[in-house]
Length: 334
Image (cartoon, rainbow, N blue to C red; front, side, top):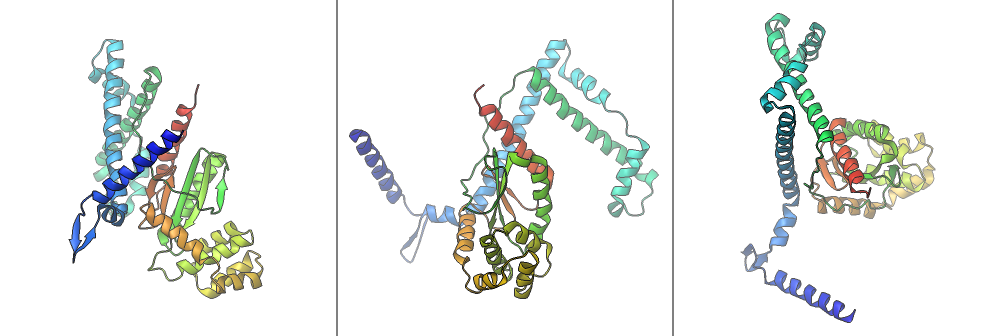
């Protein structure tokens, strides 16, 4: 045991010496700028690049997997892969109905303008056929994965983000944890609330949702609103107050107090809490943790540590959540 401790101390010392010996990436007036400083400064960009790299690798891997599955199935049937795709995709996609064409035309009237339906119909039909082929191809790949055992070891980039002890919704022991860094005055954050509610409705106890503050400097009312939400949490009504904040177009000091009354808070305690900024440090901690994780805008979500930026639709959340649920299922011993 003593040898192990000594070895660990020596290893730590060696790493420290190596870090100290690393030359600076620049010097200004004799003052060094280290690589660690540089990487911390551009961390949001590096996180974005890591995500883009993973998405490119994942897309390429999906293509290679599909090609191999088609080759295996074609060989089993004694036909070429091209013949397989013709039989299982092209021939199984029916031509779109007039009702389908009309719906696409009506749904995109703003972009189409006054162009008559008959003029643009061939393009709409082609679009619907392409969509049908893509859906059928996805279904075929899923079918063949069931027939030919397929495993994927490619791992997404994951960032270690804590909950900060902030309010939670969903399952306490959920497989998937979603941590959001958000701003009550951000219009995109308001829009993202709808997706969050859809996720919680769809997945129930399978997900745990945690809200953390990241008030942006250009939003004058965002920080007071965040601190007020903490004061509401102190009285056990965070989520009620949280919903009121996102639903309100006015986050002035008077409105924050009015919302407190609406959710039934003790106004004397609430007003005192807000006036004394009792939770300023807590909001600061959230913002600092978000910055350390690479957040530079809102909303920013971390799904089991996988970053998803912006007001994304339910489908984008589903894509990552379903992957994480499948990953957890496959990781469990059979």
